[in-house]
Amino acid sequence: MAATVTVNPPTGILGALATGAQDFIKVFNRGGQNLLGLMGGILPTLVVLLTAVNALIRIIGPERIENLGKAAARPGIIWYPVRYIILPFVAVFVLTNPMAYTMGRFLPERFKPAFYDSAVSFVHPILGIFPHANPGELFVYLGIATGVTELGLPLGDLAVRYLLVGLVVIFIRGVLTEFITARMMARSAKEA
Amino acid sequence: MNSISALLVKVGKSVGGIVSILFQAGRDAVDTVIRNVIPFMAFISFIVGVILTTGVGDWIAKGIKGSASSLPGLLLISIVCAIPILSPLLGPGAVIAQIVGVLLGVEIGKGNIPAQYALPALFAINPQVGCDFIPVGLALGEAEPETVEIGVPAVLLSRLVTGPLSVVIAYVASFGLYSIKK
Image (cartoon, rainbow over the protein chains, first blue to last red):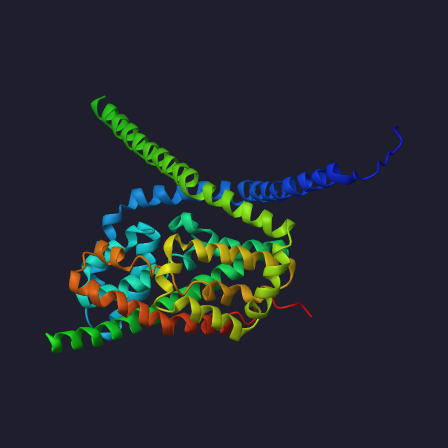
């Protein structure tokens, strides 16, 4: 058994350099630890999930959701939830960011800005449960979620609430943006 | 004999089809992860390293702590992000939202921000989502140029209202989230 040896901390210019070097590499060691945690934690799950969902979408065929787009184009108050909750959800889930916005082509011009607003606002709330929809922007959710995990708290509750509040918010956005678009279109028609 | 071989061909074909779909799906998944996810993880890890080991973290903590752990503070963040001139600048790639998300996450992890604020914070940092992409997004939906001309200001104006509103809704929805067991 070797006796524990303690050495004097380095002093002088060399000492300062040594401390500086240690502090310098400490930043990257900590960053590396964080990277390893992410790669070992969420990455394998993400790869498997992405594979499963990609396969599912290939088997279903993205063209099947076109009928939903046509249904959402109908006027009338009962089609609002279809247009600004169900269609954005399905479009973002199946087509993912950014191809989800192509579903707007089934809607009349006056609904297009509102649908875009609604769909684009859903590409992050969906991440907690279905990260395949927008893996390039995962950290909007994951950044905050990592902090919650660090406290030892489960993420399920946060992910579900994020998704549900997201659905409420995209509905409000869709309705309000449709209203504003209608007003602006009426004004520009009057001027022309 | 003929019917048996026909059956075998049919089974073989459908199994082959499914396997090739799964294989292609796996290839796409790995491709996405390598191209989009791992580079961002590396970048985020570097930022986390800097925050946690240098004094920058404490400095940021002082700045954010007041604003991110109260409803008025979160509302202020969301209003700033929703200002029609700023929102398209803050939007691209959601990079700003991701960095701010990581900063807040680190502070939540250290206990400086209560965990139930995670939900309203997710909305407070993101009223600008997609504001940089409106013309492209509308073009993907085959919108006329006139629609784009009206759609861009319509979405930006709408965000000024729905941005802060989303924070309020999320704040109300966060009641009972991570409540401390008595």
